[in-house]
Length: 103
Image 1 (cartoon, rainbow, N blue to C red):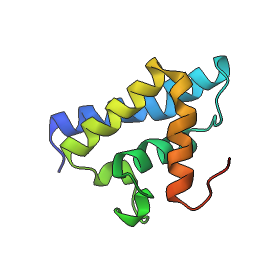
Image 2 (spheres, one colour):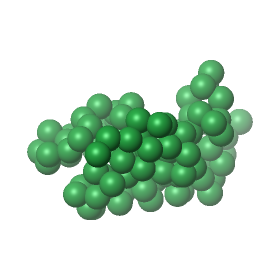
Image 3 (tube, rainbow, N blue to C red):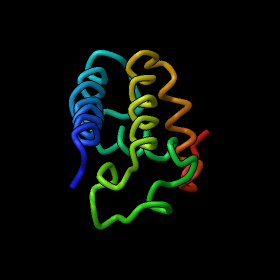
């Protein structure tokens, strides 16, 4: 069973991915706008690789992260909130790790 701090971290991550970032995408030009796209970008940049090379696709990825990984994922998501102009580079990183790089 997850600890209280793990639950708090999961809730914070979920809020960033499911509410804050999609809401920001409505106000700021971004290459993505859906929560699953933000999750892909954050998780791929966390692992510096396609996230499902590191986690099972059979369960929610964020529920498989350890506390340190969750903190880093939250930091990446908060970085996007604070610097939305940087999402283009983070998205390109993700696409490159997936073999879908666009110039």
